[in-house]
Length: 114
Length: 113
Image 1 (cartoon, each protein chain N blue to C red):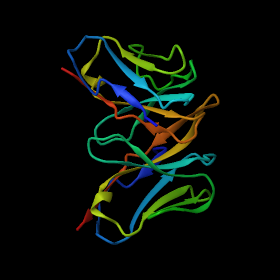
Image 2 (image 1 turned 180 degrees about the vertical axis):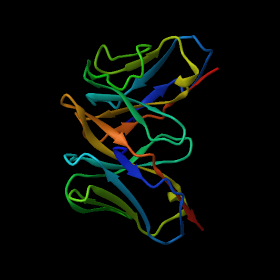
Image 3 (image 1 turned 60 degrees about the vertical axis):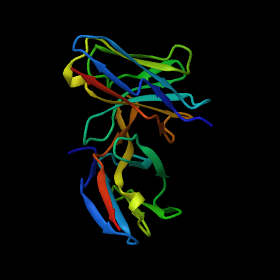
């Protein structure tokens, strides 16, 4: 089982709709969770971090965390064509010997259609 | 302020050549990370520095890969005797400390021919 799993997509939504991106992770002890956006040919850009159960809102973005279910999601309201990108879920996971690493899923490709 | 910078942005190397990739983190960031990203995959952790100390190099794929950060700021990732499987985008990230939010540079696309 991969440590961080995401549906690869593509996820296609019409402009103005809500896009819902999901991620599950394997390490029950993980405490830190991040969403990155990556445009084609560019590097990952941090858009949200979340550390506590529940919702965290920032503009059109809402991150949701449920540690009991080992599930984190990202909602994008009023989706715009400029939101079309790959969204990477990343989790700090213990890698052994008191080492931790930021572990990424493969990413979900989102396309917002005008 | 300025973000993370990396150079060169593109590098083409013949198989067997040595390459050096540079990362200049955000000013004041004590933690620096190197990742490798293959097409269609998420970034994979390579190594981590806190100031000048390399605290974790467990992700380096072979002993041909070597990273340093001698003065606790700029870091260099060196790959000796490059192989075709080394072709990837190499990303550098920095954070204010430990495992807090990481900010990525633009990456170096390495192509080994």
